[in-house]
Length: 285
Image (cartoon, rainbow, N blue to C red):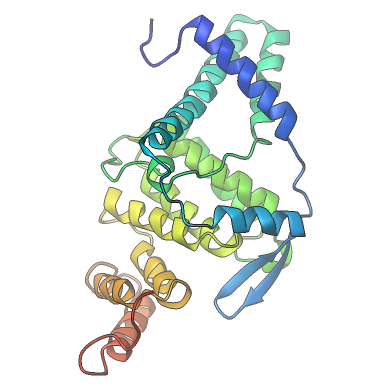
């Protein structure tokens, strides 16, 4: 038996539990948000219920106790395990010509898209710093392309076409790629776009966005994406942590030379933040 695949009894329990959750919590998020543009980029204007949910999720994620960490880690692991088991089941039915059961499994996989998975603890929800993008994996490449396509359909770079439901779906695809294929050479790319979606399109997610940006360059220090620059801007203008912003602006100058405009901006902010007695003009919160 594959050690990464749960026993038939455990799979059945997982399928039953998550199916019940899906039935209870599924909802259509079409039309929840309209895009607005503020001084630091596009922001979502949402219904009162959606705003309340976003506000709840942006609260400090303090650990209640050691037991909470164990439980959250179990939930995260079982989410990924359930998804993998269901995909393998669907693939098995497809290979052996069981069309009806293959449709059932595909339908159940589709239903998972309607289940909102909350980030209970950042350290448990966002994968470890220790991952490394070492392997070319066809399935991971396909997921990456799917995520990019969803972002484009959701209006990335074209505010008039913005759809929050597609952005949320793209985020799930990128996170799924990292969870299911942690050695893929696309994990740093996926992490960067998790940061982009969290920063630009999901209100109150700045703290999560910078975590994703940090994963992008720690997993691949030579990543082609301006992850350090984007994190610096969030720390500077949204989180008002000028010490961390200054540190990252220096990193931009040292590591992201390919984007000349970002380097010039970073150099200017370094000068502005250190112009008074050689130290940042504003203190961290």
